[in-house]
Amino acid sequence: METNPSQSLADAPSPEALVDAIPYCRHLGVRVHIENGQLTLHLPFAGHLIGNPMLPALHGGVIGSLLEMAALAQVIFELRTAKLPKPVDIAIDYLHSGRARDSFARARIAKQGRRVVNVQAEMWQDERTKPIATLRGHVLIE
Image (cartoon, rainbow, N blue to C red; front, top):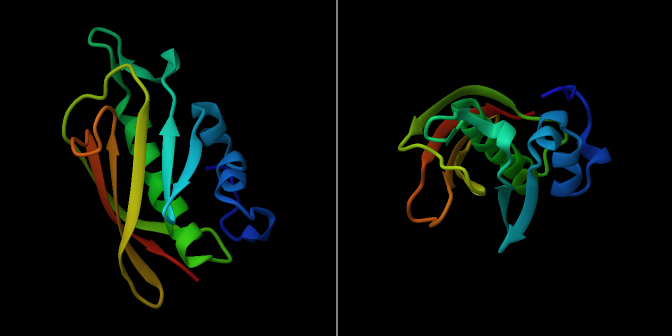
């Protein structure tokens, strides 16, 4: 992300504005939908997202980035943090290849402490019950 971690989020009143403010999100074409107080990130398929043209499969970095963006966006949206949260540690489980089609990611806060939030995210393509990758991590909030 090219955003300044100490930058105030007052300039980003909506999740859409937050995603639009991150150049990598714009490059990927990420869109945001809000359903029942939860954010869903939508990654429309594009040819430049392919990492393995033989399959073709999405690049693992794109999958990891979408999961991380979903986790951070959900923390910002749900906790209304004044500054961008900083990832402390993140573990991603790649369950199977992402195919050449639209992808979706959603995160939830598993536990919130005073300074650290435990967040989990999942990414799917056809069916939400069949994730292609999951994320577990901690982020630092102020």
